[in-house]
Image (tube, rainbow, N blue to C red; front, top):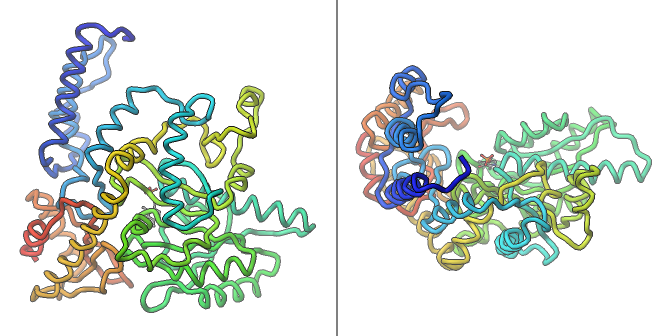
Length: 454
Ligand SMILES: *Cc1c(COP(=O)(O)O)cnc(C)c1O
């Protein structure tokens, strides 16, 4: 099992061949199957004698892979798709082959150095100070949770130092915020106040002030420790008023966290950069390279204005770890809820280093332009109504006269026919359709084909 035999060498060729083929061809969209169908086709794959590499690979390529949607298909526009660059995908193979421990400087210095340069690019785009830094974690959910844990740790220490006893800690976010904020608050046993976004769905400081004053009047022994701004809501791509939220949080001693899992990729796109003004006031931010920065699953960049606060909250202490505690060495494990970690920022780093940041700006701008094409096609379509002008690259619209069931039937048929994967969502209780466009291969051709079925 641990010998590089001629059989393994032959298998390596097959695996590389398959991987390159998968990258080179436009993949089929594919379709989930039921456990019964998969069992009938794959059989029981775990046996005492083993299937052998060739047979297990055949089961994967012929049975299992076609039962996984190709999230990089140009007509996969549901949720937030994925569109890794060729360089990033290829380098993921290298990372997989390299057995690098990405948790500590002692073990992974070269990888950590490269990841930190990639994080620096993001933090410079956000105009954070040179001392800012952080770590790549699995996804936005873990990134948000880790940032909020650091925020509460900071607030707790301060309350302790001031001799104040807080009965319950509270996060404030927009009623448009991602579900992971509520999930993080539940894990932390905190309260969440959802402040009302304005009619344009963007959250502003005055609404936050109203929500906090009302809550604290009813719960005087509770304390707000974090304000979460969303930079690109998942449903509609709307950006909160980061400028007023940042001022409000900084004035009131509240940690300002910006959840830009999808949208903060737009920092590198000159045409929308101004929408993020105020991001420089944040105490922490997240952005997922696996969403709109062309990296494979899974990677979320978590950046702290003052990394020491992240480290104070997250460093694990144990006799077997003490040897790693050198003040002058940067250990990524210290900055989030994890210890062992794959250097999951490396595929993103490699592609950014190889292609240069200009290619990233151009690719993000491309997708923003494709969203504009979608808007035009929807406006020209007799049966469709645009929900609102997109701020980024998510385009939402409705089909006149359709019920929620009709939307779902249409979506199912579209996938059955292998035309596209577009799922219904909802806004203010009404069903909507949305295109989330992050793939530079998505073009007018795909959009026209989908809209023709409406
Ligand atoms: C996708 C998303 C998340 C969650 O990120 P995961 O990587 O899926 O865990 C959080 N916030 C926003 C705004 C998102 O779009």
